[in-house]
Length: 245
Image (cartoon, rainbow, N blue to C red; front, side, top):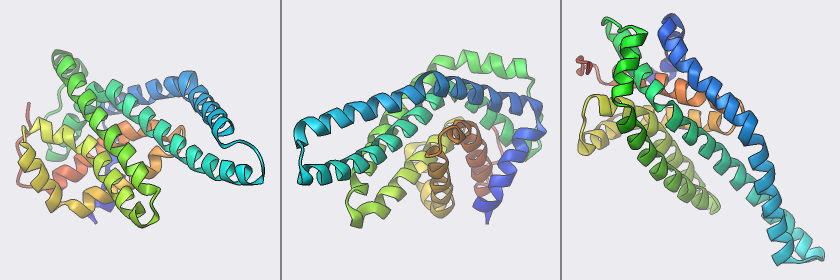
């Protein structure tokens, strides 16, 4: 129930604070610009390359046509997923300083603590900008690698549920890590904490996987996901009442 209720609360915390709203809006506008300038053309180009590869190596004829269509369907699904997840991850890198501030503000809202001004938040973010971008880039490389592995597993019917679950776990940790890092939690503590809240975190990860697969809608994933998992993390860790300044 905490995981389900957090969806609505995540939106409310963004909308009730104008600074949080601005922090969420900036990545959405950036994502929209990237989608218009790059995303649409990239999918068409990659699909064209795939079609040429199929025609070259599978040949023509009835059997070739059947295999071609099967491979086309699989390739299209793979490209669709990979391009969408790549788009969201690249956007997550760009948006990471804003999402870090957003996560911090939302946690303070939940705990009823004083919120810093936008200028103070920006100063703190700029001072940690390079460290944040480097950390986020490392996370994204790992996430994309595991996501590709999950896609390959998904091609084996019996392993499809494992593929979905693995992707959900990876995506959820991308957003929970803002809270983990802010509280200086060790890898062992993060692993234990995720295991204790496995169903809630994984459920949220599956929901955002669905959003990632929808063009244009997926531009809200970095901000909304950050807000959602911050709310869920705080509510799942009532004993942690100290917010890192």
